[in-house]
Length: 252
Image (cartoon, rainbow, N blue to C red; front, side):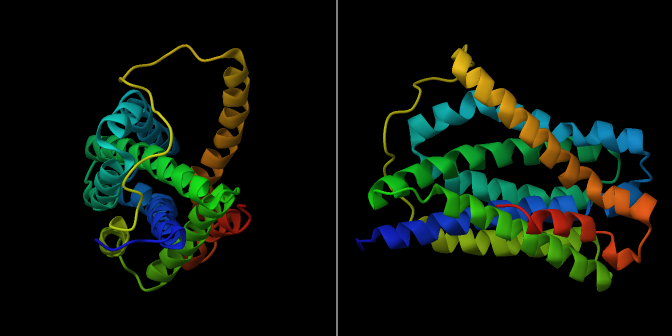
């Protein structure tokens, strides 16, 4: 069996962070197009956008258990394939409920990927012996910027969200296959032993509140900047994603 260095591990895990950011940005950059295609009002779109965090919340009680039981390498492979594979469902959706169901699946896979890939990143950081977590998260943001730019380009070329998402799915699956064997086979530290929700420490609640406020601001920009440009700014159709791309260019 080939021996991989910490640098190999880092590149592999970085590739998975890139896939996660690219898939999310691809969805976020086409929200205005999908809303227009389905004839959704702002209220209906707002209700639909709640489906993604619902899926994310459903993943929370089981993600830690799955990583503990099967190891993050197995889970991150499954989750990345699911996340990329569910993306075209968002382009295929033909109505409110089909899109809502697809968003729940997309959100579930996304949080499963988030937890498992960050577990991998913790292990790689331990092998380096110095803080490198920021580089992984920075790559997610870079992928978000590039994903938004790709969305702008494909809108200019008049490509539908479905073909856009199929292209990104292909890129994501290829990167996942190439990176998987170089991920960490064993995790660092112990994880929780079973699925479930537990009462957090008071300090963790305060940190969670700060994180919630930050994610609320991010979520507004991710979900609504394109719609704002489409319906209020009203630029050329190829520039509807400019707000989202500008937001991602400022992400750390």
